[in-house]
Image 1 (cartoon, each protein chain N blue to C red):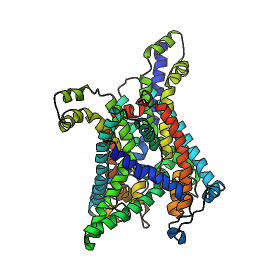
Image 2 (cartoon, one colour; image 1 turned 90 degrees about the horizontal axis):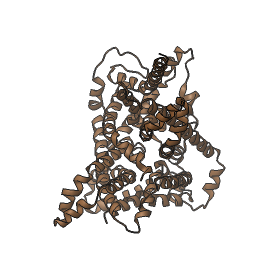
Image 3 (tube, each protein chain N blue to C red; image 1 turned 30 degrees about the vertical axis):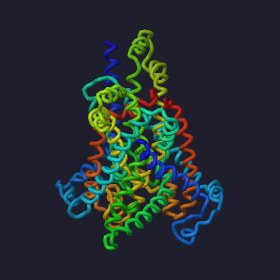
Image 4 (cartoon, rainbow over the protein chains, first blue to last red; image 1 turned 180 degrees about the horizontal axis):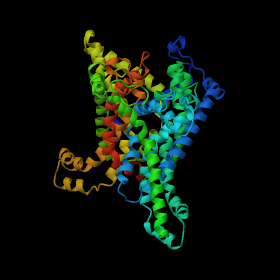
Length: 280
Length: 299
């Protein structure tokens, strides 16, 4: 009985809409024109159109690179690095800890605003001033390297979270193991590869699941910074759905993309269920 | 001698890497903090000619900043309260029950959590539109036509507080239910059994035993829900069009898109007003982060 209100809300705003998405994806529903009033059932036409639509495939590829480089590589490597560097107690440790966590607390829209100043083109842009010290000419960052820049911004936002998780993983590894390794004359690198990494695998795996899910769902940051542009270069699949549905008014077609994304998420979700090993 | 030499080198390396990382993390904040107090701020980072609180004053006096802030607080506060209430009761039931639906329900909560919100935004729009029409019909039965607009702003599903609150609460409910379920798992049922033995009614048990016990879990689920709602951009972007209901993230976004010259000082000041509660909530939630997202493997 106590779960019922939650179940009703989840049904109304998650399960039922998912059903609606599947149905809508088989119609030509649109926000404007005759198809807005009388959508026609068109079966799998949206899906056949989808699979031959190269902008859809491009947005999948962009999503893949975005998740791979920002969440899986960037945040993980830098987060693990900071966790290792901040493992030992020293005077400035809380200070560095707080700094690395700070970007994590910033809402997506504000992050986009901050970075639009950082990445501003022209010789007075902050990043352009910085690279000028190294003799690099001013760049139009968001025009020339849009996807790489979005990745840089997202890494910036996620190092802190990765660091916290890695930190908890590291603190579970017994100090005696390192002691023993040092006795046997192992170098720091060997200790890292033979002790730290293998024992950290569960933590890393869990982190990868969580961060893949959250990174695919990112909307505000990219929408506020580039709206998927220039020319679709940063249009990850969530942004693509939004632009197709509310920008081009193709609700039916947008829903077909959404259903593909839903299925994909559910596949990741089943891995998640297994990882969490729900005990009853 | 040789040993101390390598360790100073390692120390220097550690500080070097940390300082580079810190610059990466801090640099974007600098412009925001400087521009907010600069009377004549631009997109570029520069030393201000004059420093004042004028931008903040203008956020509230000239722009609708106060309204945006209040709207954000109403919607996120309301959603957070609902999440805490539902996840408190729901988590308790999920932890104590052994009914057949327990396992499927828990599985579906996890599956629901991995759905990216943009995937559901189109059908949600259709559902919200239908609910809004239903509510409009209902309101028309009891309220005179001239108050229609005001009432719909409160109970409507599109351009209405109720819809925003319920939708945001639902989106962040699965994580909260999960937190509360695992939390109650760690609380021994003996306390309640003792209270039952002493002849306490359900109300007394709730107030005297369960609520105090559940406090840390509720704090965690409430904070995470608040942070997520406060950060949310997609929901207000899609379901709010009237200026009376505009919330902070959309206020910033629209100020940023203004066709004539963008007022960066003003924009930075709004951004700081918007970011401050998020940072406070994050600092409070920080100690729950590991047990919430890291403890899963043991679960």
